[in-house]
Amino acid sequence: MRANTWAGRNKVKVRDVPDPKILNERDAIVRITSTAICGSDLHLLDGYVPTMQDGDVMGHEFMGEVIEVGPGVDPGRLRIGDRVVVPFPIACGACGACAAELYSCCENSNPNAGIAEKMFGHPVAGIFGYSHLTGGFAGGQAQYARVPFADVGPLKIESDLTDEQVLFLSDILPTGYMGAEMCDIQSTDVVAVWGAGPVGQFAMDSARALGAAKVIAIDKEPYRLQMAERAGHTPVNFEEVDVRSRLLELTGGRGPDKCIDAVGMESSHGSAHVHAYDRIKQAVRSETERPHALRQAILSCRSGGIVSVIGVYGGFLDKFPAGAWMNRALTLRTGQCHVQRYMKPLLQRIERGEIDPTRVITHTLPLDQAERGFEIFKNKQDNCEKVVLKP
Image 1 (cartoon, rainbow, N blue to C red):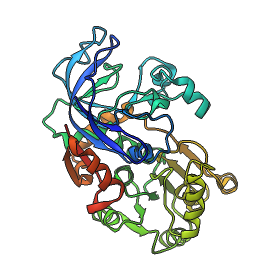
Image 2: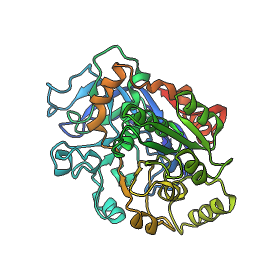
Image 3: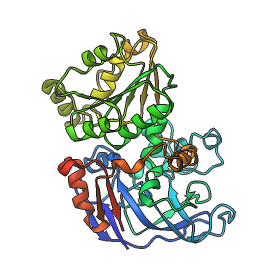
């Protein structure tokens, strides 16, 4: 089959790779009809997530048709011919973490748990196409994929909704929604979102759906800010204004009630010398993150507020503002998304027209043009917000 693979730092390559096979009795094989390039994939591309190997199949946002199931898959949950969206975290459905609906912390799905434990203190769930740190599972930027614990994760789509309407239930829509849900939004809240990429856009839409009075979008790309403004959110360009000062102006001097970091380890800063400091430290591996967005969110949030972190961080950062966090009674909430928890409720919101996932799609390309897709997405060419790939 054809698949998009990691070929070294800053390089992907579409190649012929072996077809996936049933390895465990609860596996299924999915023929992929749509997949996507995620901002998290850029952390792999740029070499900031360790343990990637040449030839690893990338991609953790995908959906398609079940064409084979193992003998242990519950036929009441999944059958050949089912149309499914596959969540990016692989969860067993039986461990303590899964019982608590903390699916991205599954205790049984990562065969390389020892590596993750050394990195994070405790293991994390397996993730499709996201390094050997999270299990070394082949990803979904391919024609076919093996799906472990197939009667736990995949969501059956039994309506006539298009792939584009439901594909992002695999990751970015639940991730954005969880970022907003962790904010405990009240009807009077002003919510500020750092990052107007796809996850940030969905965090904004979700904050509004959960009742926020005002949602503020923070980014530097005019086309992303325009997209957020068209959706009804207030844009702030961090290259044109001081973000904290602007947020104080917009909130009567109090600061946003809730702040969402939808950027993560490769954030930018409007000040050249501040950005250069962290960029250099990251380049020489003195830290693994550029935490501009996280620092700014903590310093901007009103006292007693909540800072929700859904942008991906992988290791260690410098100059974390612990004093502001502790002394001003801020609550910090984080997590890789527990996608399985949110898929059905969000599918219902899509069906009711409350959220339109298709609004972030700017490019649709055949799988064989994945290299071009990564290039335009990473470099923000042609006003690229989200790339969908068709195997």
